[in-house]
Length: 261
Length: 309
Image 1 (cartoon, each protein chain N blue to C red):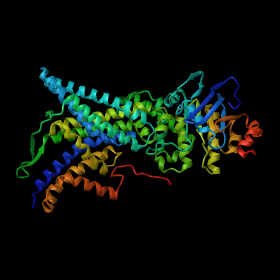
Image 2: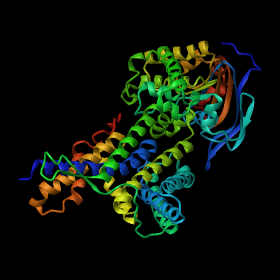
Image 3: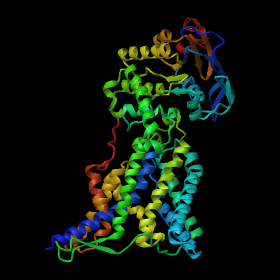
């Protein structure tokens, strides 16, 4: 799964522009994400990286351009439709359901996979009970995988930041996504936590074959993890290629280090 | 000195009337839990549900329907009205305000209150309409143990019974079902809920529908007690101290808060009242709420708010 072929495009972004009033967040951005790869989106602060993720999962609707996901192009996709289609995500500033336990948060990720209605669930009877147990089983696998067994019953608001990020990843994984969007999964973490998180990301990609698009500031992490990198600056794509190509690109170096005018 | 029998009578009466406050408070808790909105319109929804019920009931009885059929049809009609209201509120008031500040949403429910109060009286009339769904006479219990026995109002017992069933049902719904989990998720974080595939507009409709049905239940009991009339909307104000004491996010809290207020204000009236001039029943609840706010701002059962700084 580590070297995807060119024709296996999972998602393609074509000429996407997005503006809030007069502020242009994205201008004519095009790139694609191939099946099974880890695709990094990088760029200086305010480059439009998060806006790009928000467009992909339907929080924002682009003013121009289109998104094609698994062969279907949709002009306006609402977030829950994106989730239904197999896109899950995490957020830059952890967005968990703070009142709930880690377990319930991850179970919430199974919402779409449950079939039986609330009547049978309320009675905890027959097939609905079997279904709940089956989902609980899958969730326990994810909890094992992320090594958070000890905190499953703890309300997430009480957890340290690094673990909250892990629970959030767990919730996204519980959806068994085809495409996983990670918005700065390692922001604010110490070295050890970063290494753990990198390992989880690689394992998810290896074991489940999940396609991943991630935004990250730590260049060492990006170079290690990703197959291909797209670079944004002021809402415009300035480079796209393998980590080595991008690293050598003059426009990228200028964007990061500043350039004398 | 007041006899023990009389004390018991006041306590039981107070507890049972407290349950009736809880019925109204429940509607607030539901919406607050699921959308973080303090719904000022809950009192108006009780009025609307009551009017829809009593007017259709009267009409059906006048047309010669047997009483049981008229009650069933009347309840069904009122439930449909509450469903339509829930849909309209979601579509035109809250839907456009997703991801807005809590205060903005609160203000919008104040607007909804005036529209609901006006519209419901315009459509169904603004008189006092008596409702007779439950018996209103009294039981005398333990006549052997206490002189004169203990007087218990049958309506209050019915109210308590209904509230109990309602709470059990709601607790199961919130804790055990996928929709309940989705409701709690939406209350915590709109964006995160959307990202796991929860359609917010549908969830809000469900919440307002459930709150509308709770309002209908409250209207059956309160309408029998007071008659269906405009002043029923002031119940919303009585629910406020109940919520402060029980906690805004807790269904059991709404019940316990109601019990404390109900019993507290009746006992205070009888035992404290004579010493400070009487008539304290009307403000005692608010003083009690104030005391709770000082000691335990999240209420007895509310979720402790933990902020990381």
